[in-house]
Amino acid sequence: MQPVLAALRGIHKRYGDTVALAGVDLELRRGELLVLLGGNGAGKTTAIAILLGLLRADAGSVALFDGTPVQRAMRARVGAMLQTGGVPDTLRVAELLDLFGSYYPAPMPVAEAADLAGIGDLLQRPYRTLSGGQQRRVQFGLAVVGRPELLVLDEPTVGLDIEARHGFWERLRALVRAGTGVLLTTHWLEEAQALADRVAVLARGRVVAQDSLAGLQAADGLRRIACRTALAPARVAAWPGVVAVERGDDGLLTLQAADAEAVVRRLLERDPDLSDLEVRRTGLAERFLELTTEAA
Ligand code: ATP
Image (cartoon, rainbow, N blue to C red):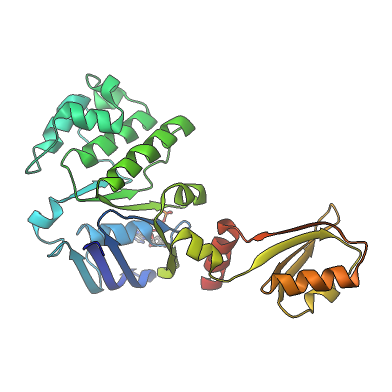
């Protein structure tokens, strides 16, 4: 197994009366991309700030490599892209890459970092004159220029158009293949699906699930069954294994069921005229909603 790069253990954090984190455990390994998925206010940014040593937890411990974020030598092995930029905006992109590289012991040459971030055409532009999406790409360049072993990205693709976003995903995957550990926050499921080796779902300051995408989807073993039938929803809802039933405006009956085979057999027995039968795994979107609603 790959070594652990960073870990949060039993982290609690409040802001006044607001509980932001209520006992969070997270672990990130080398060559792994962990997506921290959660809705607005779930605590993602707070968890990241604590991991980076920008914020102190009220309780719990943080490990960064073989030390803690208090140690500059540990922080120097991390690259970060946060929601608040904090970039001196009169400097040109090449100057910024050079400046940020100088904070690290063995930075990349400017051209290599620019290439990695896909900003080769922006090097001579003052940061201030760039569009929001271009600034975001430059921030990624600044996060990787120090050859970090761990990359922490807080909603990195906000403001990127589809093409830029897909390019970003590809670059990120290449870094992970080369061994970088990446912790990325998003509230966007498609992004988690495109990238994650593992997903930690954060809701109300707690990790309510932590698994691979496939594991997360299969965890409850639920299937979604749809069909056209004259059977009354209330009757079907009472069958064993049936979790939820709904009839859409189009007359289609949709149910979620734990024991799909038995439920399908029963549907066909009770309604010989049944048509348009479809069975599939519940999607990540449904699972995510379920998890976050349970937490609420
Ligand atoms: P988003 O997706 O909206 O960025 P998030 O998951 O990053 O949300 P956090 O920013 O960590 O969530 O916030 C967690 C909770 O803590 C929220 O209820 C937020 O209002 C609160 N909070 C965050 N920062 C502060 C602060 N400086 N002072 C007071 N409350 C705060």
